[in-house]
Length: 530
Image (cartoon, rainbow, N blue to C red):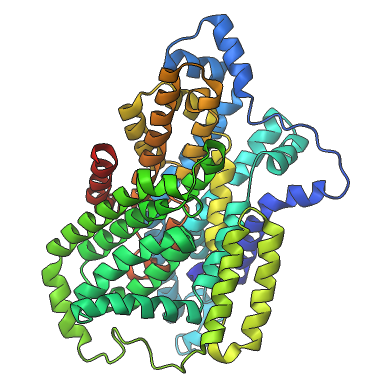
């Protein structure tokens, strides 16, 4: 990325990524941490609301805002971060204009440089403000940037030790760390060639045509996400789409439709199992969902929805896919892998074993990080069969998720009463809509804290049956809306990070949402009607 070419910007990015972890490291030095005062206890809210006779949703939200004004500030900061993501494209446009203007001044002898002096010899060849705007326009950096005013607001309303306790006790960074590790492994040459070989067998049914490849990537890869995890499936699918389609510069409509379809398919494609999709992972243990349960209630419906959505988009873009065949017919590597040295089977098996280790220990960062270190050593020992391991993009995605979960941990004061007051159908729609503005894993996690969703806390058979229906509705809605925005599902930033170079000026959030609307509606129909 452009911002990483500047040492100062790179340093700022590294510091921002490490910032959320600093308090935990400080606390580990022997300081005794007090119980975190934030987020405020939902039980305390409810006692106060029952005593005051608060009934309507508006009354409840007003009461909670009055009890703790910090709630409003934290939510306003979160909404500012969301608005910032929608403005990222415009910010990047401004940065580009500043850089072009700066380069023009440099070439024309501006800033005291002689006109005949070669531009490449100029020391001042980077516009400081252009680089600042490029950094502010990086979607992966936005939520981390808005953690800075959040820190100051916590200190203002409480103190520094409160923020330290909050980070140490209430925010779980396991998922961001897991995504960094699994995304790095999934982007290695052995894994990509293995996945490409598997998809090639499916594409051969359609004679390796662009349409056959497109369908196989958008159907098979998301389903594989149920077994290799959604972040890994997103990484593999995005890299293959970049190689097989996006590099040939298709129409903007095709690019956004494919990206939206990919996001939706990956979001629901992880529901065949209970460990691959983050929103399912958040509740499976608490609600007792296993693999059989997931396939019976979600998996087969997701398969039907993925197939129908992909078939409809294929019908819409069949002419463009056919014309693309003319562009690729002279490319001998299309659909046949690349001409690099074959990778020994044992090397591929070792990498897949490291990925399996990471998935099996996804709740234990010390174990999968230790495995990651061994993985790096293995890649050095077998460097002939690996490209250079790049951790830059995975770190950016991990930074994005770290910032998102930090903000999301402070939003339960308003999400809990909203979800708790909805019936099945409104809950499904509400979860789908809320997912567009918050990570779907956060939505299901907060739902798991609502008493009305937990059969163990209920007495009558009617109440228990309603709780099961609400559980299904909130999870189905959360995974259905996982493709509407880049922040809706944890793996989405990985796909955006890989494909955004093919979108001039960056990926526009509104066009992404439009591209995902049709498959989102189809998946909603499948989960509600089947």
